[in-house]
Length: 89
Image 1 (cartoon, rainbow, N blue to C red):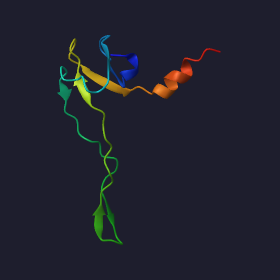
Image 2 (cartoon, rainbow, N blue to C red; image 1 turned 120 degrees about the horizontal axis):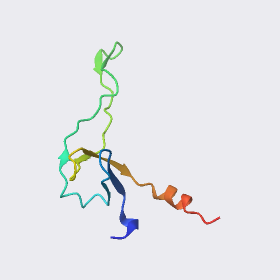
Image 3 (cartoon, helix red, strand yellow; image 1 turned 90 degrees about the horizontal axis):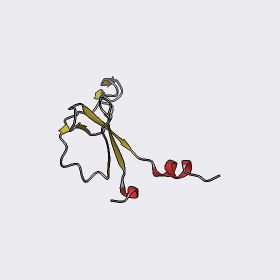
């Protein structure tokens, strides 16, 4: 694969494991189940006389590290900032 095809970095905070991925080649890793986070508690709207539920916050996918077993955190690679930092001034 070319380095331009990588969109994500998987990084383990416990060991030096790091992996670049395009998001499609993660079949060999074990995915950790996660749930969405609640942003606010549900509140009562007196005008509508209903309970209003705020939308949940989506979480990134997390995987188990193949070396140590801790969770890998995934980060999206921003290619625009990478091009800006590689300037030749």
